[in-house]
Amino acid sequence: MVAISRPSFLMLLLTLISPLAIARAAAPPPLRVPEGAVPEKAAPAGVGLLEDSLDLLQDAFGVLENFGLSVVVEPNPPADTTATALPKIDPKTPTAKLLPTAPKTTRSPVYLGDDLKQVPEVTFEAPPTGAVKLTTPLWVKKKAHTASAVLHLNAKEEDGFLKALVLARSELVGMPFLMGKECRSDEDRSKALKYTAEEMHRMAEPGFYLSVRKQRAHIAVMSQNLIGHDNVMQPRALKALTSTRHSEAGRALARAAVFSPDQNLRAGALEALAARPPEEATEVLVAGLRYPWPAVAQNAASAIVALKRMDLVPQLKAVLDEPDPRGPRTETAGGKKVTVAQELVRINHLNNCMLCHPPAEPGKMPEETLVAEIPLPSEPLPPIGSYTDQFRQSPSRQANLLVRIDMTYLRQDFSAMGETPASDPWPAQQRFDYLVRKRELTPTEAADLRKRLEGESPYRKAVAKALRELTASDVQRK
Image 1 (cartoon, rainbow, N blue to C red):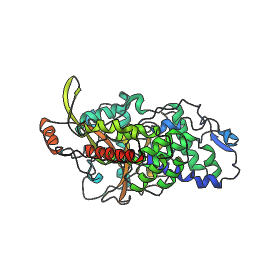
Image 2 (image 1 turned 135 degrees about the vertical axis):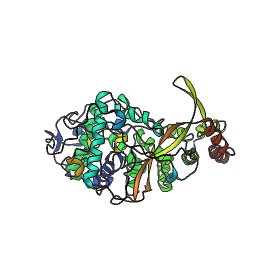
Image 3 (image 1 turned 90 degrees about the vertical axis):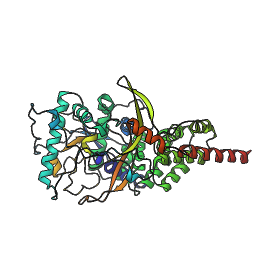
Image 4 (image 1 turned 60 degrees about the vertical axis):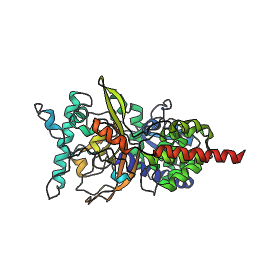
């Protein structure tokens, strides 16, 4: 996963559009907008538990004059022509030789613990072998070859590289990959995202940041900052969402209340939800009761109690009669019955760019495509907000080591910071993205999992506690 798409770029946006910046904004200067950057207003996007924030950005720049601004259109700056072209791939190269080296994996039992640091990790490729660390030129050569291989296979078939990778790697089977239209942003969303990234980097006047933020785009940015980043930005995001009346802000607050590992943030989100229409949080709360990580279900049950949601008592009772969401179940796949289990996995956000985004191909993409550089393990991470800086000079940009942000194969459910050993020059604390893999089980694995799930289910325990507390509070009110 690439470093700009959800942590650094969005953290920059939050800093620049905080309520304090809005309060200090003076009469704004004319807004300079790249040519073609203002999309037509689109219909509201559907929102589910795993919504894509790009859907919320597509109508962010419809009528800037509502904010008292004049709009001046200027051409997009010229593309960088000094970067080195990616290497060519011999058309006769077998597909197997174009795939990255698979990491050594052991087939462990489904993890049932409660430590996020012990959750199974999925990686794009094996780390380099040998005692000597790769230098920047060697990292550039390695990643440039991989990027070329991806583009080569994608030219043969839509998402061809990812399809070949999943077929060759058993640990990737069952991952919630999106392909085809599902992973691609339409033209308006792409323009909105690129416009936002470029303007937020170029402009420094507080008035500008007030002006470009329409409500839904503001919510999308804030919601990304609530889940899984360092806690410097989270209080500001919470305050911004609390002051926004749109129903999408309520859903974002509900996700924070259910998914955030930070108890203080969950408490703040619940306080904000208590003053909002209850239906805004319903979908997230009910889905959280069955999420295959007990802590999420416990948070959802506690939130239902804190919000005094008596209307959700039937949903709580339903969980009492259901098996543990982590347990084996039978499904039909490929015309045959298989036994599967839902398993939480994690992905290091910095090290797996091309697992979640395809490489960019300069000169062969729509003009509105936003790209971000692939960080090199031998180089310090660039400053916050610079991953999309088209004028930035870095080894990654000079080698055209870029990925497309308008195409996303994997979308996390939540994120958390975790310790990463031997990470220098990168920080030891790095972001991990968490999502659910559907894992096919052998009969032996299924039997072992059933045995380990015997006893009181943490899901039943959580909802039973919630029912007792709701009933007691209801009796006291009467």
